[in-house]
Image (tube, rainbow, N blue to C red; front, side, top):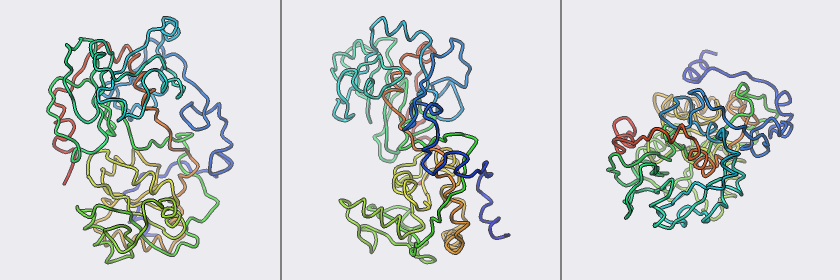
Length: 398
């Protein structure tokens, strides 16, 4: 018991744990009434009502207006108080994608807002540069280009970045960018690689009716193509104390990219652990390596990249191991051996399954909603020093 307490010293306090039947009836949430779930869940149908005119601070939509969470849900569930009047007026908010429609994979016009069934859909998209003179929002991907026309006072300029600061151009813009769209939780429109949301925030653990360790004979797997960086050194050091099968040009195992599904079937069938190591150690930088490669499969991920508190805010409760919670690769390997020998302890890391789902965050819906929020538009704001915010001290570590 003393050993278990030692290794669990850095984990958050356990949430309320109930049986699967008490919450859903099965691990897929099939028994949850669709009317109880908001529209952004795969089976949800509940749409928001128009916001009250005097909303409290915790309902704000911009990063500087609320310190609670990432505001994604606030934006998905926002309808302006006078929206019926807006719709009857027929005027659409214009979004100019300055880099062209190709990089966004969307059509010009209102299609994406209507097909996504956005609560706020009175927006239209264009890539016609001459619209910069009248567009409500001018959106840039990766870098800013100064328009050939004079900027109007009410216009919003937004910069979209998906990669970490180590893999994005240097951005030297002072008092130009109003809003940001990045994976960072302090962005105005947070664009995570995936977003986990609980069906009921009070229930974050469910007793499972299966053994996730059953018939698994191999220990640690890693699919990787970039052999540089500290993560490779950590993996090789870990390999001294426990079997780590490295797939790709960095290791001795092979699984072709065009057979990804077979690779993940092997992961589900044979392995207990997976290295979800990022190529950058930056604030909130958590990519598909955790969400798609690991959590959407029946394997326990070991993470490296963002800070422990970032993973706690983004991933299901008790669903992973963070290397920073162990003094060394050797100590981590000792705990992995313990998990390998104790099915009950290993299965405790899968009790999050069935308590929620990875939702569609409907990026374009949220952009449109923001453009209809008078509170977000009434007080213009700028990033005084964007580069300092994006990659200043404390944001990333080498």
